[in-house]
Length: 237
Image 1 (spheres, rainbow, N blue to C red):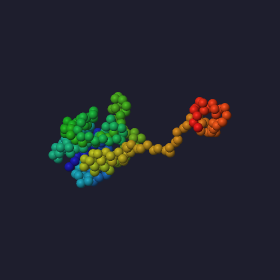
Image 2: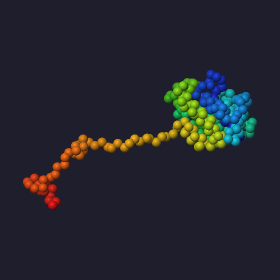
Image 3: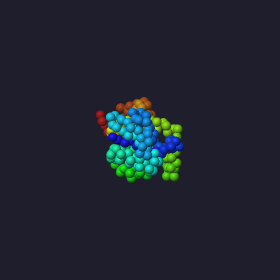
């Protein structure tokens, strides 16, 4: 069994926040796969289901972000699981919008939800970092994270959430490399080869052009000028 956790803050006023992208991803997985309706347990909203033959428990902690670990820890101990059985989806400031990276273990990176899960579950769980971008200065971080996604963000956010749900099979099977590749392809996060147009001949200088366009003049073979040239250049006859 695998626990897939989406992080966020409960309540309608937080629903559109960038900090709630984990909740959004969990909601999309539930909509696209065979899961029970959300119900209350473990200080969370949970739903049971199956993805590609893997039993999965979706969890959205309702403790507010700073207490997320209480909820996840309760679910982990109830099912006698380990941190290796847990996958957490959450917002990442240090990734460009729409980019996804996965790692196991590591630091919390200033994310209070991750810090709380570290405290209650240990650190060796799978972390799916969903890029929301950095506002550019430390002073603007709180407003950025606790602000709603802008209308233009939907251009990358909707394809990202759809791709996560589409590739949830790889997520459930912990096939991290293929999951990230599929997400990158689905969201356009790939390096395109530069398209080269027809080869343009190198421009010639006006002097070179003048030489090429000038009528060819042959050196005289007889007479005083011919004799002078022979003396200067040597007689090649």
